[in-house]
Image (cartoon, rainbow, N blue to C red):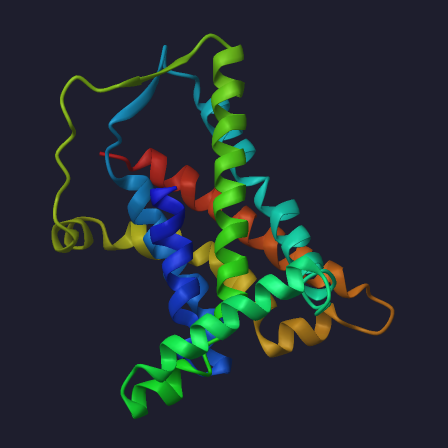
Length: 230
């Protein structure tokens, strides 16, 4: 959850403050942060240590739930939450009303910017991310346990170097980690969405394609990061 929050949720929260054409670039930041999270030493490990093949399979299992989670989130947002008479619609209206009241308490210039913030969209993405990472973590845990590995804690916490030192020591790892996210960033751009939403193409397929590209990029970044883990 910490990795997902730092690498994906924080950029999701900050993205609406960027101009629309630049928002897809948040995915490159996601890739670099995700690479950093993967390269840092972990205080938990599976014992006996799984083979590389099993490690990579476990990573893939942990990431796959993001695809149905975001597909379901998009469907509910456009149907259930868009109906004012439904419980989802009332919940969305309540959160928007609470956000508007909060914005009114801010200084005038800040309030004008905050009022345009898509609070419900960001909350929906956050819920989808947390649901996906929780499900993926449990599936990965079950996968390794069925193969005889137990999750254990290190006897002593692993030291973590400051971010500046990590950047200076392996700048190439961050670039390699962000590179796979060029494809989903291109698909998430206005041009990419126009191609995905070609006539006759189901609209839901657009989101699934982008999410699948992000999952594929995260898998590649995680593999590279795990090989460079200190």
